[in-house]
Amino acid sequence: MTEKLTLEEQKTLLRLAREAMEHAVRGKELPPLDASTLTPNLREHGASFVTLTMGGQLRGCIGALEARQPLAEDVREHAVAAALEDPRFPPVSEDELSGISLEVSRLTRPVPLQYKDADDLLSKLRPHVDGVILSEGFRRATFLPQVWEKIPDPSAFLDNLCYKMGASPAAWRSGHLDVFTYQVEEFHESPNAPN
Image 1 (cartoon, rainbow, N blue to C red):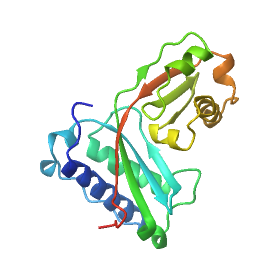
Image 2 (spheres, one colour):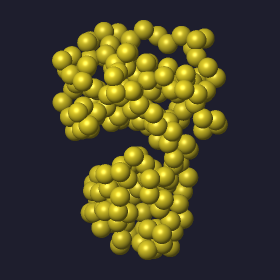
Image 3 (cartoon, one colour):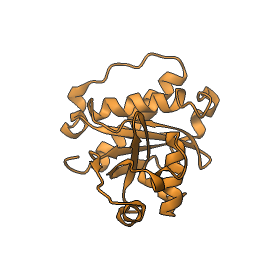
């Protein structure tokens, strides 16, 4: 991530995410993105997660850990996926659209976290700062930094992340998993959204 997004750029991404979600839920084709109207930050390759909540409860969350397309396109793609493809939830219905709040997280590039053992790993985690990726063979899972609000205890955080990855919750204690950390720039619609 080069520089922080301006408030205007954040608003643009939130608007693009909402438009993409609403088009997809209504079964309409999404118009192509006019890159000439975007700032260099939004045209630059970026990785994002889009989180949908309804009444304060998670309603969908999908994203990418690696930057592989322009940030604006990445946000649009994940807004659609969060609404229609999150396997934990049924697809968002048209009736729900007005009650959904959107949050966008722009990720920094993940960096490997070197550690000796479980205690060392715990000591190196930065709650409320770092997102964490655990990886073991072909399995991988992540929690965004925002998850620390719900699971503030580092041991419980890692237990839950192992479970999400499909491993034993204690896998981080006994084996040596690949661990990566990243930070996010997160922003969300104001409470009176949609616009």
